[in-house]
Image 1 (cartoon, one colour):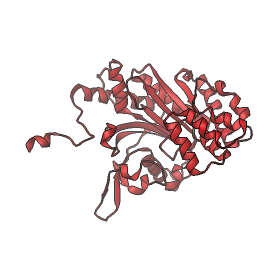
Image 2 (tube, rainbow, N blue to C red; image 1 turned 180 degrees about the vertical axis):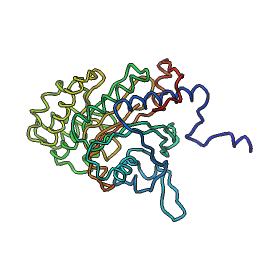
Image 3 (tube, rainbow, N blue to C red; image 1 turned 90 degrees about the vertical axis):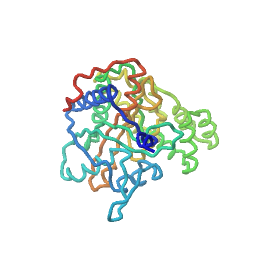
Length: 341
């Protein structure tokens, strides 16, 4: 019986010794990199009211939340994602602030995944949010900062894949697909079955330019110039065209920042977080099958908490970066594990 007390529950683990030192050092390097861009620290509670992560906000499915009750009978949840918590706090403490707000954070998140997925149920997130700026320069700032932070923790080979939520949304609307038909397309994209997408689209007798735009969903582009023809094809589809133009503007700025070599464009990129409204991105590297960073624009999220403020942010998956660094044989010095900004 006593031996059972030595074990952790399924989905969580102890981190100690040299591994813990390396993780603290990694967090320190990432956190410092965000500080150099002028981002200020914020901490939010580990648990929040259930409504902060409700389905209307579009974060994690209810069945994957750790839920419990306080003495008054309110439903509380362990946070599965820190961004909605930051949005709530920003709406509370910066209600009348008109200037852009730059915040950085780190902490644990909790998702009750099915055991067969083999994922940890407690993970460390570290990220940043830029609140109150709807410009393409803000998009570029976040992606540039992501790249600089990853380079600061010894990673050399990684790629940031960038997409735009409204590209696919615009195509679905232009094709007049109903929710069931749109969901079929999304599932095919998630499964990387782009032949299936082509077959599905062929059923609807769409205009040729729209069919060609759907055909761009399964391709990766090093530069937006590689899909320049999309602009002419989307001339009659305003939402699709706006998404293309935004990505073109973003690419120009990232080239000026000299980080474009780390970026590729995926017009078929999808996200599980329904609060994203514009540019979205995810980072990948060798040694882990999961993204090491996810981010995107969420211009409507703060309205759920009473403040209108266009925003963009990202979160590093610290545990995935640790795995990648280890499997790539990289070394992380540990002299300054306690030197947080």
